[in-house]
Length: 193
Length: 193
DNA sequence: TAAAACCGTTGATAAATATCAACGGTTTTT
DNA sequence: AAAAACCGTTGATATTTATCAACGGTTTTA
Image (cartoon, rainbow over all chains, first blue to last red; front, side, top):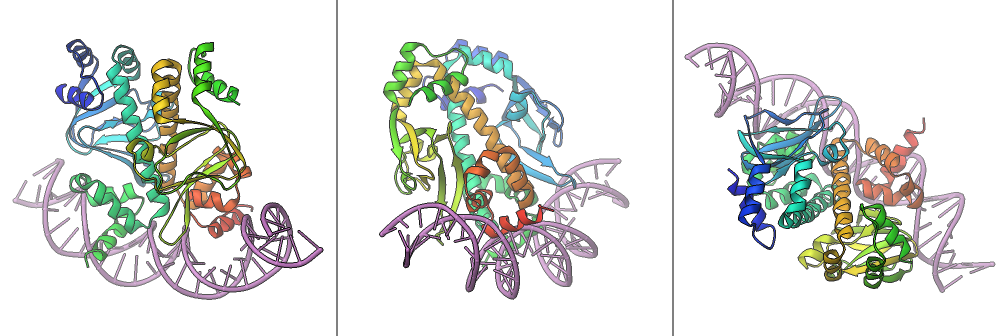
């Protein structure tokens, strides 16, 4: 269960973890299983845990006044899911995070994470790398959203995230891109020729 | 010149900087002045520096096939400007960053920054805080972009960033929001009554 | 295994936003 | 002081995207 996380951390920092560090990490991250559709986080709750996805797929979304869901993130194996805003500010979350497939997580509280970070330099390094990659990805997505038409946005997404296309149904991809499922359906039809 | 940066760092970490640390920082950050319209970064160049804005205002934008500018960031005093993607990956930047007003910067290379981070824990702490705040802000902006109409997006922006409204002309705000200047003009007219 | 929920598609229409062109009032440049 | 560039606004029109409703083919649930 935890090997996957250990491997991930080793891949995202310079010096590999020592045996002691591995033990610390294994002790601090709790395994948790979610059945499809189960919530990891519900709107209105304060987000208490960060989760590392060992197996499965999840989505993060908000629900507007009309009851329409807006997907803000899609997650699969090796992704980290949480609502940082809620967790850090201790405010009720505006988002839901739930399992799209049966999912296995390793979860940790912020307090335990901060604790671990004091003891394990590689973890700090990994988080910095993660933050960097995240900032870059967000930047790209934002730029794409304000600069491109729906069609180009879909093309770019499909190019950069083919795994997601196969893993999530079209209407979730559409919502992620900020368009309706009908529009996406028409875009795909058009770009066939 | 450097006091503003020192203050900023102290405000964004726990323990205040020691005199030695302050000296190190002052030695590593180079002052640089930009006249209005001067580039800090030009599309196609690799971004070599991170800059802290002591005084003035800048903007970051991409230019599409048709020559239309798309504002991805607006910056004023106490903001950090750079293209992380380019700087980290050492790839040519897709963006321009230029001065909207006469501007005073403190700039530092990535190598010097990494060096400083090894010597000054408070700096690492500050950067983590910065990354966190940044991730939260980006999340909010993304969510707003995919969930809201142009009108609501403008309202939210005006509420959260009144300083920007006063500092930058309307057509830049429009571009930042991903709409045309005409549409923004009409939105504002409408919401008057 | 029957019923229900889900998913992608299509058509008709409405709403949001972009585009193009022009204007008058600034501010900046020469 | 004149010319040029900039800025916000408005009108007319085109384009993009959303909305609403319905369908047939899955897959899931009971």
